[in-house]
Length: 456
Image (cartoon, rainbow, N blue to C red; front, top):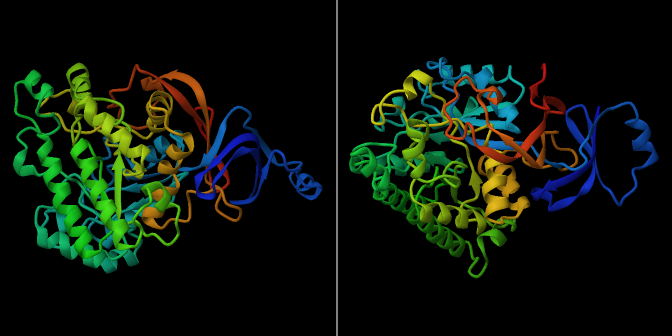
């Protein structure tokens, strides 16, 4: 038994924002008591010997959910594996993580899918996995959607590789039905050097780079197809202002189709009659940095899609504020130091992100941009849960006790010693951030406590 006392409880799923206590029996939340309401004598007696977390001065929220992570296992365990990836997730307040498929072998078959799921069960958090959309991520032949769902896949993606064949994408939406198809939106025919914005950054490195049109073109096409087919689309890691605007227009069409003409995206999301078919992700890195970081930090700041301009960064923040973008996802992408030490055009794209995501959200969205903390928490918890139909993302009574506790005022400098991921490829090492996860509770067990991974 566990009780969490005196915390500032933020639970957007249940519109709770108050000081209070949470009582946990085994793996389930038994009671949530507001401070102004007295704890019953029966409950007090029942929990008198329970382990106690004094959360005074801290926020208590549902465990964070990441819908976009790479644990590199199987096949690339020198970068990361499911065990180390889960440790990094726990350190970042994440209790559920959805893994991408670009492993070796690819998660396009039941054997590999079950390997990932079963190894995930040995970790302190909940590890889920998508199936790839196409065999071998080749974009040519669809996987067996029905079979992969039956064996535990939660959705479909060829993340890292865009689906260029329109007919394949249309059929994917039809087969996926109410499950999300998550899309990497970069038209590779327009890109000469990935991970480098065509503009100031490409000029600095003397290459052509990746133009914004590569993202714009594919988002426009894929939203159109999703609306026509009635598919559930997740537009991954938006990097451009044009991408944000395209999602906004598609959402308006989705609203009108369902009879919601004059409501905001935020209002619509609170209406149980509205089914949001258009989802979009922003990464903490894209709402925190611009292409200047690539010039300053080199390959540590090389990622796909690349960092763009300040106007793009501000558009992403605006999209998060008005709920055009409903999910914050890390795109946690570990790479070994020797890989990142290559030249700017040869080094792989990607950065780790699970352990800094919450702090970046507090630093740049709440403190810098004035975004409501509860709205930020929603994009890290209940919104990702809704995308995949998970039961988590809430502190409701009777729900699993997946909880993150954070000090939103603590300032800390990111150091390699803090990182639990096997790889350390982050442009935020050495940077001061505000907001730190102090405890992570998964299924009622404390798995992360004051910067130490607990035995499990």
